[in-house]
Image (cartoon, rainbow, N blue to C red):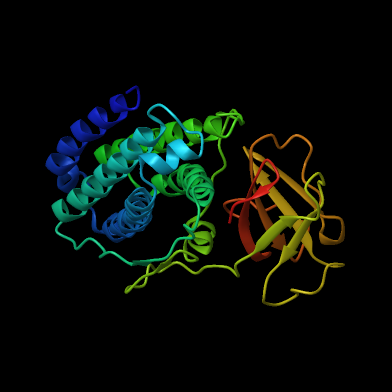
Length: 294
């Protein structure tokens, strides 16, 4: 029940956005950028919404109970799914109020063979969603910025709950990692095929796994330039506001990474930032406490 308090502020802000978005964003110089940002966010929210729709249709209360998740655990996932639906409605209304067309739904494909896969991917999507919004909201202003910030905090509450459901730290870092649209789309496109161009170039998908269950060594695989060159390429780890760089031949998880870790492969050891992306060869891929998620 405590998560129901997230939905009410979002719904209230939706009214303000629809009423005030058009006057705020009349400047032609920022209009196209605003619509692109909102449709980017809408693409991600549709993905999350459809994920919960498919997962909850497949895994009923009995499946949760049989797996040892008693009480109202499944109801929390139902509520998260409902709130993702609200995010879709809010963004759709905001775009329509600006006299533009919201992007349509995509085709979706999720690995949902087991309940464990559903729970793992839910955790990944919510943690990544926070980073996605943090990288996008700088392109918004006024009531649209307020609405996007409100969605971001709701995503963060989802992520915190799911982290703790796994017995992990619900809030591993004081500040969360900011990811660019290019980095987010690289991960998201493994689940969706869209009938439109987001106008965002993705990197090569990266598979990052531990060499052994108790190891800190990360193995990286991708297809593209320098994919087999481990002696002159680097692993970069983004976690919280930190970046750690190590040779790909000695790709080790940072010891102080206590929660999620985004892994990239680069062609130089210059740290990746939101303004320094030229050296990325592949990724990101997401590890959580050493567990490969996607």
